[in-house]
Image (tube, rainbow, N blue to C red; front, side, top):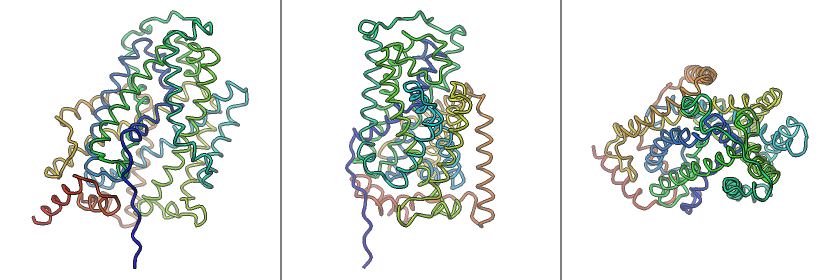
Length: 479
């Protein structure tokens, strides 16, 4: 008798989902981006990041509706395949997540190395590569002690980051540690042009908020929990980052914030002295290590899924018999991050090189968010009678605002569009050549019915949603 496959339990509530959506707020590059934008926009940073939040909220609404429709362990390709087809789904994964691992993963490693260099003087290149090797060993050998702390680390780091931000803004460092305020202008020399011109860079504050959507398979009432968690997380990110940016502006010169490769540590030092710098350095090292480690774990598994579907070479679908990991995908991702980390460190880990890598990913990720908004509109047109337990109000208007906002954000970082487009072009050529040579349809569109059935087969019973989709499937079969 065939053994029944175990199903993930629907046990997660708001707090776990909120934590997943909030998690990247304390990545090394995210905190660096906060002070970079503050340096560019000065005290107008509240407006810059608020404008950047608008398309992100539109994308959050899109992901809320999509995850309510398909509450499995899905990602953008799972939503795009039945909407626009496999070509667009594959492009969304390879065009964004590979860039994320290569550009952000390596930037995180370099950020942790330079943070440690600030404290110990050890060259960043050495420690960055050692951290990366440690990530590889953890992913291959599954070092248990790391796993015991990995879940609690983001929460602890978020709390520490928020405390540093609030204490700095309240002037505790000035009264207790002798920190000296600086006279930064209310607006930079370029005025509001600089405030509006930094919108694209502020997008990095929020990138990755949708990380909680693949947890829909384990979430109780994801159609209620995920929308609440996404909005609560995004508002929290905005508030905490604005507090930290204002504390940094109050005690750190604009020029330092704009030019430093560890400007968030400089901001913490300005507002909270050596204690602030030490705490922020520790947070950065842990956050960068944790984020890069997660990316090194996630991307090979995406490759594994695509390889099993015949969309990538079979080697990426090979699982090591002893260590039970997609070994070739893991090694490939390691070298991707390895060479990019060396490049960043050889360039001196400057603010310019860090921003270049971050903004390259930003352009691709905004494209991915636009795709999610289009997915919702297409699925509504193709499947108007599908039960939507969360439905975006005034969707055409909301997504028009979101898409225009995303395009504007891309325009403000247009210096980096060419590099991103070159990578996208490479991915498109690969998808076309791969499918042609293997006799696969380039843009096969899967059915929503198949996606729903797969989710019902592999997940635990979900009240309301299960009954609604069963009725929908019956009606579809009766047609």
